Image 1 (tube, rainbow, N blue to C red):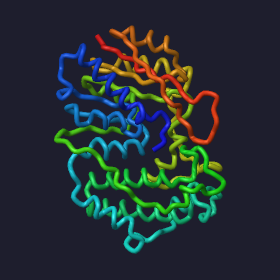
Image 2: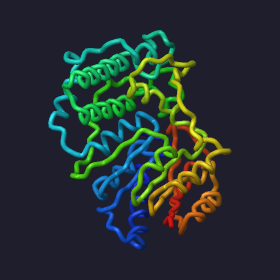
Image 3: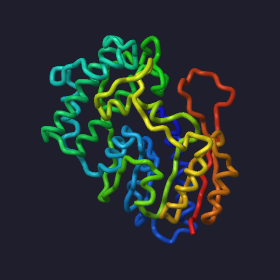
Image 4: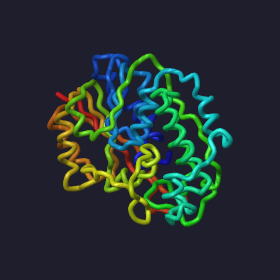
Length: 338
């Protein structure tokens, strides 16, 4: 997924930076450590450390992110029926298209005026999502299969969405990728023997109830709300009844204090203060609401501070758009908490 703030392209920088820091000053082996990714997003960083640590604690307040983490982090043993189930869902004869929530509200054929998906793909999404729910409620699939299939649907639907990457708006005409038929591809996860934990809560609310060794923070950097930019992924994941609002069909979402200039510093301070972790790593770029000096001042109140950085290509909702500056500097703020 072309995701705001995604750390996929920064994975080598993050992994080597975290590992080298811990090798120099951390007594416990990584394999015996608990690693927490508290703003999980697409689970990119949690997946990096899943097979290297004793346990990953993954959290995000967005429900689509929770679904991805339930699959990529919580699932850790092979699902023997995975391919068979996907084949049934991909087969038009076995899972015929239906006109339901997505078609009605997010395709032109439904009369909403919105075109996030082609009519055909919207009906297929409805059919697949409905079948997955029926399977779960009837006991035909277990929880692990449920989240695997749901994660596969979210990522596959995202590939054929008629947007400029985020869901703040749809395109007036169907782009080439949106015309392609929906095909569910497996959201394959890594297997290991360890049990992991996944939560769907506000980071500042859950921080006092968890503890571990390494805390990784990747909060929103600016005023762009994930609840608005990825509302349709939440809608597919939840598949609940609500009245879409406005031209873009938004659902109600809770605005984040991390996206508010007047509140973000106190949010960070509170999170650091209440964190029961020895090591804290914060990803934040040079275009964020908080300045380098503000973050440094907060971190230095709680322990030994250091900093690493790397140049990084900025997020682009439209790859064809020309921008004055196409890169940012990604900072990794490091705190060994006393």
